[in-house]
Image (cartoon, rainbow, N blue to C red; front, side):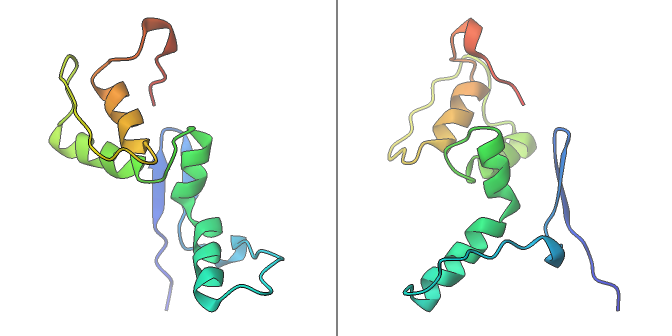
Length: 110
């Protein structure tokens, strides 16, 4: 049976989320619990973690808000956004770009 590949397209970057050949295995897993090992494996092989690093977002959750905004058009230029509990701040980064509250010289649009 052929395996189904899920591909994520973000600007000009393509990530295949089911390519087993490109899995990263950390070398220093000794002394860690099984749940910590599993989390580390998922974190190192997550395509959205790699995208977040590439686009300098604080967390992979930024892509969740980007997708919600793309579908529902929540963030409009000139709006006021109040975010409570903004740690690590990835949603704040997206909200700032979405409502155009960055200074003119520092805009980084995807």
